[in-house]
Image (cartoon, rainbow, N blue to C red; front, side):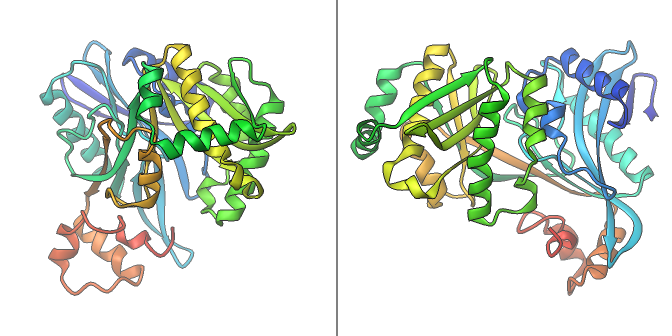
Length: 368
């Protein structure tokens, strides 16, 4: 704990129910409704080497000013614990959630407290995935523009439909004619729909040879649904009663977010993915939601194929910028970790200053 006459910064683990309840209460106090901060969504990938933690930043009258979930990770090379740690955001869009309306000075003060805690606890570096509420501003490290994310206004269904390219509308009509059926489950989800989603999702992960962090167990989705029924929806496309395409949507801030999904490759020619997304937009529009955030590509640019695929749904809407945060807290120890990891360091200064390009932290690049 760090303290002055005005502020306190506390770090907590999620090792007991009391701390989990405290986290949820703190989120409520700062006005956070984002599905991406839900504990059950963040609670994936914990093991002996990395534990989910959170900071709570309070004023002298015990008012919560900021909440930040993060993974505290041991730095280990060749099975030897260095005694150092680093910090990384959980997957998604998070970082610190600040109480609305707080000043630049308070944000700067928050980062001073965080950086001091890092130094006292041997945290070498920090990598953050910021949210879409401008929490990258006044960051004490390097805020790096990392991806363009496709976001569209869905308040006018007719305008959305007319803005689609003719071939996209034709793909939707083709799917309808082949007898595909779309169902959206929201607030009435049962374990059957979760299992149907999971079957298609896991099949897609296997086909793509996805990295381990995308392989969530079925229980992960069940727990998220049980505790956050107003913040998740499942879209399913069926062919002759068989689920062939699916998406788990997150619902918050009047926005539908694409989170995870998949499609059975045997049915690609029927265009079930286009049928699912367009049908989901129609549902979200009728539900009174205002935006659909599909996400970005695999690289930061408008030529990325995945970005272009997503952009076809909202060709005239402005994209939203996604930033990551990169910070070296302990330069000497960072260089030591680079060398222990086998990274060749020709110029110490350049290795410390060039954090904006490539994988970060560099010492984890070969051990993702």
